[in-house]
Structures are given as structure tokens and as C-alpha cells.
Length: 250
Figure: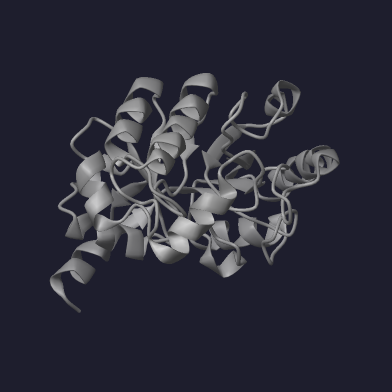
């Protein structure tokens, strides 16, 4: 065990507010995720399936009530843990800049948002090309400007608790995004499933008084509560673990 692993072993995750189920393209049920969260001693879990605007695996808008009813049932079965209903909304280039209506937001306990492929009116084609070829990825590229504006508009026009895996699937200005997260009191995620924030992105974001959070982004129930690799990445970037809001020293 190297030194970073020793440091990581001294911490535990308090809550995991980024998990997926079969209501989008996760492999487990809501209860499967809750069971793992309880086994790992988490105090809170959020079920945050993909926003309904995704072309292939967004949630069915009509199933939000079904999910709410299931969570209310599970609260009685597992009183030792807080269970939240949320959505990982998809960011858009057009108002309201995420793929949720105001009425849908009222049915949720928490809203996450992040950029994904498979979304119309979000620069899918140029971002896919950029992600796979490196084209259009320069600091002054129009794609980076448009992507960053999309995220900033989403943050300022919506009450977003966590910005998920910023920097993934296209070029983004992480410093401008971090500043906006400070302004809007939005936590910025270090993701366990994706490489973002990367070590370099963590260094950029940490120059600002932003709150960091680790999300497992679990699509398989056994991954709920995973935090070790993102924490190690944060340590490699020189981030003080005290700045990560959902871990604590054992």
C-alpha cells in the first residue's frame, strides 16, 4: 500500500448523491442501491437517473411518481438512511438549459446536472467529434465557448445541487465553471465512473472557494458508495480532503 492509499483508507463516504437504476440505464433497482448504501454505512443516498431528454436512456417522465412511491415505501423499510429522489438532468444550449420542467422539479428532492451525448440542442455532434479526435478542443475554440456558456446558463437559471463530471465529453473552461459554482452554491463533482474532474481540472477548480463532492455515478448497485479512486485523484492534485463535503476521517 502506497502513501496515498494509506491516506484514502483513513476516510469514509458520508453520502452518495449520484446513483442510477433501471429507471434509466442502471442495472439495479432503487432498493438494490439502498441496500448497498446501508451495508456501507452511508447516511444518505440519492437516486438520480438520467434526465428525460436523453434520446436513448432518459427516464420516462411518467415514471417519476412511480419512483417517488417506491422511495416512500423504502423509507419505512430502511429508516436508518435518508433516501432522496433526484434526476441527473442533461444540460442544454437553449432555455431552460436543463431537460426538466418546473413542475417536474417540484417532485424532486435534489437536482444534479451534467453534459452528456445523446441530447438534442446541446452540441452533440461537434462534441462527439472533439472527444474522439481532439478537434475543436483549443482554449479559444468556439466549441469550448459554447459548452462553457451552456453550463453557466444551466447553473444560473436553475437550482442545481451538484454539477456532474464537468469536463467530460467535450472542451469546457473549468475555471469559469468553478467561479459560477461558487456564485450559485453548486457542488462540483469528482466522479468515480468518469475521469473528470481530472487531476489538472481539480487543480484549476481548487483555486476558487468551491465545494467538492465525490459521486459514485453507480450504474451497478455494488458501486454505490465508491469514493476511493476519486479521493486518490484529489490527493494527487494536492486538494485538502477537508474540502470534499461528503467524506470524513474515520
